[in-house]
Image: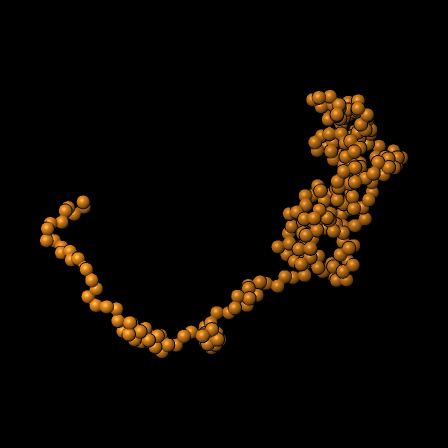
Length: 246
């Protein structure tokens, strides 16, 4: 044991065989009544009194709503416009200037304020053939914005030519016709054929050529960026693959 064994006589143990006094119920009742009377004599806090005290206190803090309102600065019209453009960009939409002019505000002054506001520096524009388009480069890449402009203006020959050239220069790769069936173009086969017919008749699209792979898939390429031999090798590599034609 920690302190060793206790010696005899160190403590005295008495055996209680009976209660020396019986419980006096009258005394317990008197004590309970006394405690209750003491408790009643003290003032209990009342919610209404507490609220009145807060109202009377000069240094009482403002309500949470008032503090929040004081901290939030009112947004300018330019900042509200920026929020709208960001929302559309996040949903993969560019915004034409002509649609903003329909709002009936002094758009030029608003756009000028927008360009001068540092908090709106992500808002940029791109000029198409039919309009000027706005977007946020935080939510949309410049390349996607260019594609979106082409799609928005519904000039299929130009869209096809620009994307064939861009794919040939960037990756490089030849572009299958079924590429334009997909997002964000969603052109039908009939629309693609009509666009190709128009392109064959215009000198500005003379660099756009067509080839057919061994599994009968049609591809387009631009002679500005690759030869027919190179374009065919790239297209066949996509279609044939490791396990033959798909």
